[in-house]
Amino acid sequence: MAEPGQLAGVYNLVVADAYDLFDHRVPVSEFESMLQERDVPNEICVVGLAEIFEDNEAVQSLSRKMNDAADGLENQSPLPTIQFAVEGSFQRRSRDFELQAGEDLYRLSRVFGPQIERRNSDWLTVPF
Image (tube, rainbow, N blue to C red; front, side):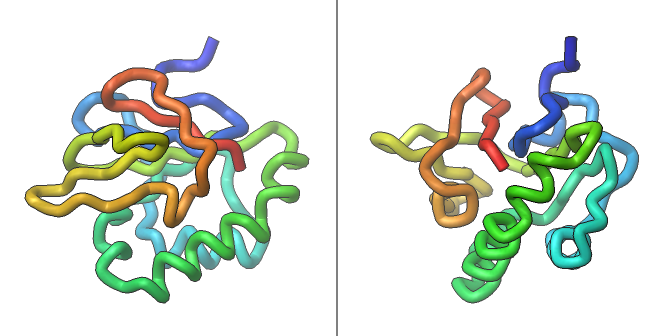
């Protein structure tokens, strides 16, 4: 059984201080390069998600690259375990979730699409 916050085959969005994070940590820009090169390691933790919400083009770029890489990630063996570690908390907003970072709220569906599932108050998962 996978550790909480470390489910393989999905994106794990976790509050950074609530779970054990993988040692291999990369910023969003490096993760985007890994997606493009189809070179995503088996275990990785992506940091700095809140910062990209300041730039609409960065949000669209990450979302597009994640969408383009979905089939490859789903067919990778073993399935990768990808964490997005965030500072802040997750807030439910009708059928969506938001990341609350300080005073700012960021709609997570802008990056991850509508299939976000709450595992508990500080852990969400999203299919590749």
